[in-house]
Image (cartoon, rainbow, N blue to C red; front, side, top):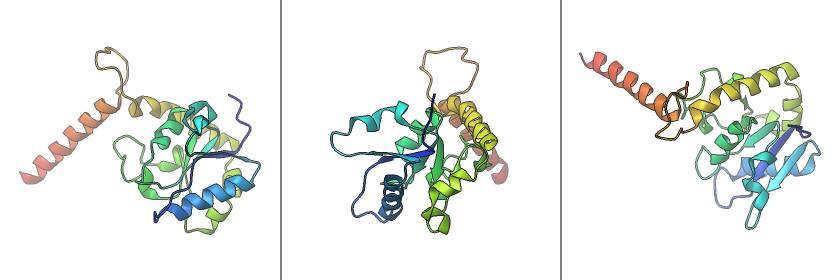
Length: 179
């Protein structure tokens, strides 16, 4: 798919949230840059729910909670997530995501100088690295999706399989600690 923009932000402003500052900064920068595609969401904003609108890098601003549904939408569309908080995915989804976050995402601390020039930070990433990151995202897709309950012989473990296997390992570890 042709992805003419460097990054995108799909979302709208929030009121009264501590996390609104990062979101407002994303909206401001994306709105001012031709390299960013801004899909400003609000009432009646239909394109905000079309995964085909997601581009090369997708900004994942903290929202009502650290993880946004759009994080998973962007990954499933092959869009590299750009996080501004480590809690957005890194601390919550250790069972589902690789330990080396740089293989599938970009982290730009919202309190850093780099957060004031997101496009420049993303342009520093070599094309080969972007390609490798997108390939890693494609590998991750099965572990982030839910297969039909009656599906058999898929050849991969879906999100439920991974959660159950990880939980079993955790329980076994706890039992060993107790004994």
